[in-house]
Amino acid sequence: MYGIGDGDFPAIFRIPFNKFTKTILMESVFLDVVLPIFAVPAFGYLAGRGRLFTVEGASAINRFIFYVSLPALVFGLLANASLDRFEWGPLVGYMASELAVYLAGFVIARKAFGCDLREGLLIAMAGAFVNHVLFVLPIAVTLYGQEASLPIVAITTVDSILVFGSAIVAMEFLHEKERSFARVAKKITTNPMIIAMAGGIFVAVAGLDLPKGVNVYLDFAGKAAAPGALFALGIILSAQGPSRRPWLPVAISVLKLLVHPVLAWICIVSVFGADPILAKPSLMVAAGPCGTMPFVLALNYGVRLNSIARAILYTTVGSLATVSFVAAF
Image (tube, rainbow, N blue to C red; front, side, top):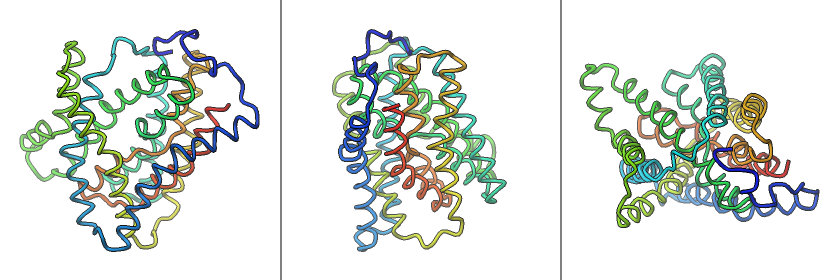
């Protein structure tokens, strides 16, 4: 799958997991991946409760992420993507499952819980958009070797262009709906994320090699995006009162952790006929937690945060079970 043959994968791909192995796997995932990541928003929560950081401080962190760190991360990801190695059939299958989850999340948010259009779009994005790079990728590489990174990078690349890119365009239009079309179009074309995406795609398609110093900067600045967003999320959660819609993040979490992996398996394995063993990295992505990007966009565009933040928190914890199950299945 994605240009990799059966023989290219480590032997562990072909070894069935027994009960003992599954237990060791889940403990390893929890101690080495989930707990360190979960500690970041936990420290943010404590910092918010201890008044070391305010909501305004979280907004300042988020502005740095949106205008500096995320553009570096996205540009570097796209510019260095090996587009010629992507096998597009199974990738289209994954994207089809993601689109189905996105539409289901949007309908749930709008019809069942009465969210406005902007919040509904970002809640739907939270249900479909995964924490690929920080959470799923290190687990897959640890279990299966570096070869397992290619399908995850393929999904991340297409997600960055289609899902994240379209979300930014939609937020700009809805945020500036009273403005003229020309003004909105100008704001979109000067948005740092749109510029980063366009530049990264151009570099990848043109086959250009970035100077070493540029890659060092992109790596250095980009690595701040995920922990910064999670820390800001913890601060925001510390300032939230009881949720008026407690079941909305629960519904999105179920959609993300249970429905999405099943749909992805149907699309990738049943429809496109991919080997279930070699499809594991992609299925682990589907079983992963909500990404932080919907939260970053919500904070940047003044959209209600409560349900999005809780969905990220719930799925980060719940994905310990779902990702481990997919990996050991």
